[in-house]
Length: 180
Length: 230
Image 1: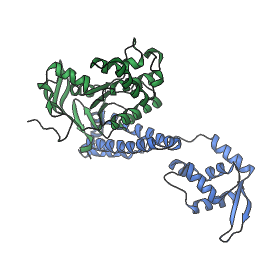
Image 2: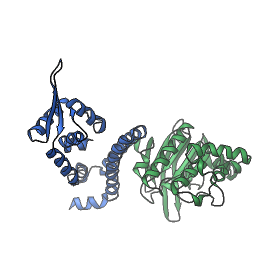
Image 3: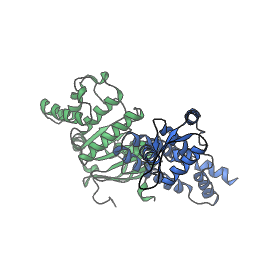
């Protein structure tokens, strides 16, 4: 869900509005339930996003309730909003290139300075597996949504671990290249 | 001098084993406590399966010490070691573990039958384990009639039917897809924890190792306890 937060809160909130008009509070609750397990949205984020969507004609105010407190606006998605969601869903995400790796930098620097690079890889490996254990445990206790979120993270950590293994097996060669 | 961690159920110290000119273990260390799941990881050919075979008393090490429940395994007779494997140890492997001519429930009951338990009693216990592994509906089927994932669960049930104190699992999900592999690991670790069995889990897959409490890495026949790395 961190990816969702980084990608587009706007599109996610728009998508949630497609099933019917909602108040900002309901939107926040729906978002948190479905996507915000670890990082719920702040009210400020919801209202600033809705103001922007309103300004861009992607949502409209469907009604206003005046109560004892501040006014409560109910938002509805517009046709332009539906088109925008459709376009966003249909556009593939650019895969992360993973080319700026801190781990790679650390390994090369360790070799350059004649430190124990294997030890650095082992420490990292242990840290990764520790995270994987926590996620596996959460997955075991969680619902299907939790399982899918954890799986996404687990597969990425596993890929890192495979890289750590491979790099550990190639350290001697890498040391030769670095020394040149 | 032999040094084994206090309270360990199974421990190895300075294990060495060579097959001809090839060194498989070169001073490996290991220990496990009751109820603990320890992953043994490492690249292919690193010696992790040899370590498992030595720990289980299947292969004798060239030198070094292995103690089970405080007793030096080298001082046991072959018959004692065989008895230990039948009654105190359980085994799950990657492939071909079930006897094709027997039904699934007969397969699960087999270790009890070999220990002299009557058929009815053995099959009753087998069915209980098959229920825990969610394969009791396959009781009357033969291994050739069930899927790989189901067969592996039957094999796990068989490995646990004698209530072993140590379960040795060598790449138990290696032949399964992600979903089946995951379920097998969940059921295996749950079952082992509920009986306080220790699990020696050999795997090269991090996602499988993530079901363990800690891991040791074997490289070039040497082991490294990752808990002591950080």
